[in-house]
Image (cartoon, rainbow, N blue to C red; front, side):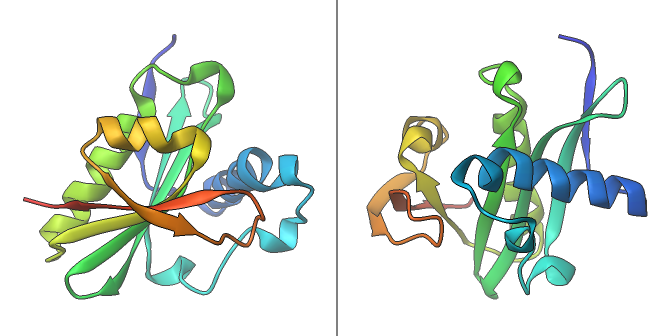
Length: 146
């Protein structure tokens, strides 16, 4: 694979490309409209995207705070052709480091069933089912941050 970089979106174009990527990978396959692209926490969240040498978005992830000590990862996605190359793991690690640096003691997320093994491999534990707005099965997961 070519080189890639993981960083927050830096321009309006990158922000639009990042949001479009999230929709295209996570919501479009479920028949959800682009109206489902954003939520009320975008402006207070920390966003990361993976971009390749051609400035194309290849991955996304976001973290926001539910409380001063609990952070939550959402909108994790990696281009289907680039999975299992460490990009998703790197984004999760950077999101955890950011949250920890801001005082988070615990990270939570709601994982699609096809992502359970990925999060388990990163030290997350399954806490039970979660009813998602996507209508597909999810599980609540959490990890204590050091």
